Length: 114
Image 1 (cartoon, one colour):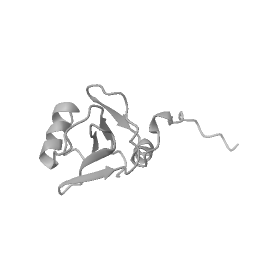
Image 2: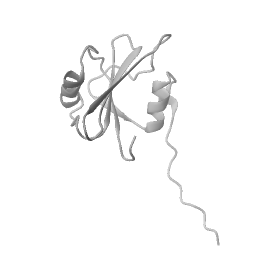
Image 3: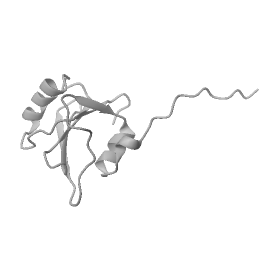
Image 4: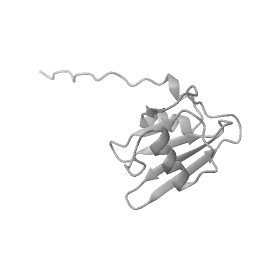
């Protein structure tokens, strides 16, 4: 992912039979975002073991999918709207690890070398 790319996660399950156009419409309707913005948009299926990601790479839409063979992905509560994840949380989510327990450390000032 390019620096500055945001990861948007739709909290409510969607029909994952949707392809490029259907998911692009969900980005606009559910997440109130532009599917051609260069950000990554994640969607979950009803059972929670399947996800799809939509991403504009500058020349076209890319559609990625992953299904876990055992278990389910860790999802936030089912509510309207979505969340923004960090790249680290995205990596954990895709691996099936509980990403909700990760906390971004607070920014610190570098110590003076004097």
